[in-house]
Image (cartoon, rainbow, N blue to C red; front, top):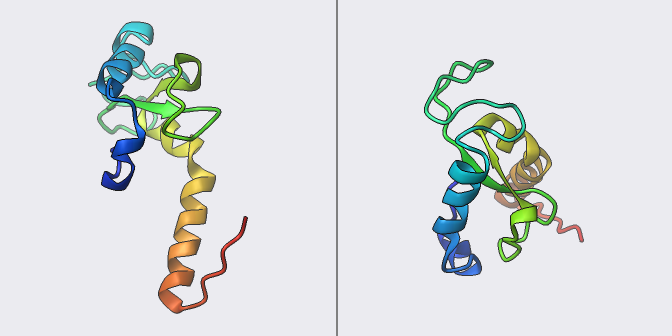
Length: 104
């Protein structure tokens, strides 16, 4: 997942190095959840696999400990973040219609 410009400053300066280490050294170029190889065709979706580095337990960009990060293919990363994406879509729809309700 690309880092949004408004969140870039929340990541550590060595984020690229950490991300590369997680994806290509620790995970050896494979999704840590489904085993799909970076650069190959995904066995379930048929799409090109691009490994991403996901925050697993604490989704805060500041928590970049190696225990909180995993190398995931797009499918696994999107499934992991599904609830967040659904909530964001709902908030965007409500905001567009003028009915925004913020939940804490």
